[in-house]
Image (cartoon, rainbow, N blue to C red; front, side, top):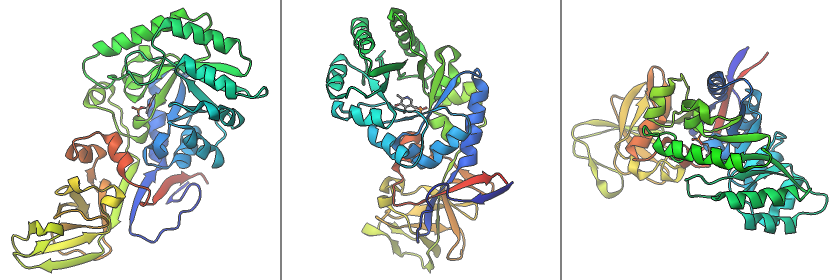
Length: 384
Ligand SMILES: *Cc1c(COP(=O)(O)O)cnc(C)c1O
């Protein structure tokens, strides 16, 4: 076995010194860790929406399937079609709403859709051709207030509509928790209770029953049913402190954001740096320039955030530009030195959560923020 940084999929050609390193071995490791917590027969639905939380859709999908995932989930039909176009043949569930006019296309490409209201079923049936076979999962809204069926009457009506139509194959039913990552579990319990009540109303239960995201899958065995939908934890990030405390899983972050020093200079005391000339050197200082800016998702609010240069922390000084930003170096450093903005560098580490805290947001948003202008390269162990 040899370890190498290899692109898994089409080899991207790029000519810039800023990149995201995606460690597919870590994703496989995380899936193994999570699956160890689950009964053997629990299906692992790998959530790869939003370009696999910024990691790269087909690369993560392939790695997850190899690591034991049996189903994929995305947000919209376009994401599912993109995976099909890139050669993924595994089942894919679209979690969001699909336009009724597009159901025949979904059926043709073997993509599973979500039913979340009765009117949608009626509209969708008008667009299905006789020969179409469309797999569906019914989404129940137990308190998230987003999409889903809210009453058992509507569920019963939908059950009738599906069963009367040979073109619809009812494979699953699910719901989604809004507080599974919070210390207080009362609202979670209420949602779970409602879901169980809805399940009790069915005349026949479909094959797949799932309601757990990462947090619920790791914290609440009773909410696992026979499948879990895992996103964030698969990427090595734990959804919240409550989950961290209770699950204690040795997950490994798969996402590292790196760049290189492209310019280094010594400035005398009293010199200004960046738009608005807001930063002034307090003494003689080494200032380095990095080729990453807000157009890459490295947004202006990250001014002051530290990065790792040779494992040592250095702050971003002055305003972040569209394509570049400046840092105050602890000492002279060579042009071409690798700088880590997110991830490990030697023994130092900037976790995704540190950036999330700085931005007063959540890790999910940080991962989604890093734009498509930043190439992704893939690290995975090659099996000899
Ligand atoms: C995004 C999403 C998930 C995955 O959530 P994580 O917290 O990332 O595990 C699961 N289910 C639904 C419906 C989602 O939208």
